[in-house]
Length: 214
Image (cartoon, one colour):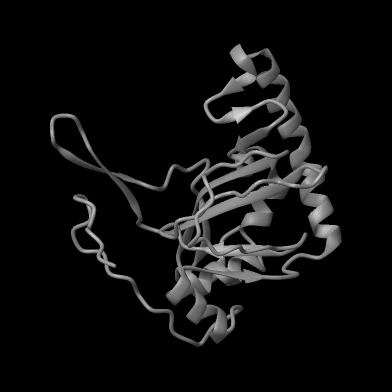
């Protein structure tokens, strides 16, 4: 298989993970390098999971109420009663701000990204049966139980399969980037711009010199 660089990708090269690791195993590091992801089961105990859900659900309920008032009961890709994406929760909740900035997450992104890390994005997804992309024969399922997490690179193609249960499927998606990262985009005029990923309210430092910054 051959790959073509994106026109804005001038010099990127994948950096292989090297021990020592604070949290992940060498097997997980190999999986991350070779497959672009790994599953970490039982990363959070049941009490922590319930605490996070209890903190987030009221915000999700607010979004659901707003969607029901919107034209067609949808906004962008969020649809009432089907799938919702509640964004920037760590900005609104001090509890979630601490959650995204402390172990075990802090230990994982220290191993994967380095000693200086910022939150890039966070959102809460709830699904009742939506298929986000068509299934592919080459797709590899990554099932994970409550309290576990799928750790993946932003370069890894992924999709959400159908929820075949009668329950609502919930996930808190948290993205990180190294301090100093920037978003590159080309304006219609052809001028290349870089915007630093350091918006102070929602892209705050979570790790500085390998130490928790929150």
